[in-house]
Image (cartoon, rainbow, N blue to C red):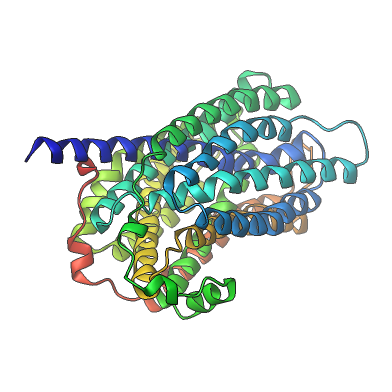
Length: 463
């Protein structure tokens, strides 16, 4: 191998690692509100679960969808990668103060006023989140023209997501308890995480400035002029794209399940399993989950090359569902039981994300070959919309309604039997139902993977 080729390989690997660091911030911005905000609003601010869930759901659904579509539209008009990457720099500057503000206790007022203040801050938070999360994913689809390298890049992304998960769902809860809990504990936690997000987004911006724009270099001659750039044309193309519809539907159901489990985890550990330090126990469990997710990345990439990425996705959904049931029905106070569940969760959750985003890159590439137009920003926006809508629908609205209708009382140290059953329903049983729907979409809507696609996978070490 010549020195030039070695240098190119090294440059590709460095850009991939630097780009993937931004996923730490993306994961923190997604997971901290998903895991802690509903619990914070009910137990610290004293807002009823139904009202709190609605206050989070509206910004996550309406504001996030519009913001993601706008960010995708704008990102596709910055097709030179160095210009698209500058959105990461803008997000690095604006987003940390909003994370801090989200966990600043509102001034005294009615329950409705407290909920409205959180909802307004969250709306601004979601707009800025879209500003850097959509172009970040779009940049990842441009790293290489080779499906195997894109899978390896997404494995790096998933590994960094595991680091972000470690910070958001392990370090953050531990910090809250170590800082004394209550409003002060949540506020100090938000300041520390905001600093981490600033650093990781700056690293991602620095590395992403030199990602080659392969879509422009490999455009089909004359096709771009014939392709429609109108928004309606894109939606018509999506409606006719069976692979995209099957993948997006499966991903939505998966994230509804995950959102419900995230949002009810603190309730499960506090009331059903009766841990004396529930947030700290969550932190240790998620630490194990994150370590396993990172360790399994090269293994899942190798397995996907043998049995196909769709099969790995299905296997991941089955294992993740089993881990939720194992944790939900653990004996009260038995931390070892939930730690084992966390290890299993990390093992299989990583399979879902690695294959989902790898399959997305195939959908984008196939669309480009047909239309001659680069729509990476559009499809990336759809995926980030699905991400946020799934977590908003499952992790706030559905959980809030389940807790409300089963009699959960905000701010109380103990709950009724019906409320405890509602927590179990929200953490394991309803997520299992959504995961079954996800598997059905992968089996019957998403087309069977071609053997050549599976065979082209390379382990993450090659990027």
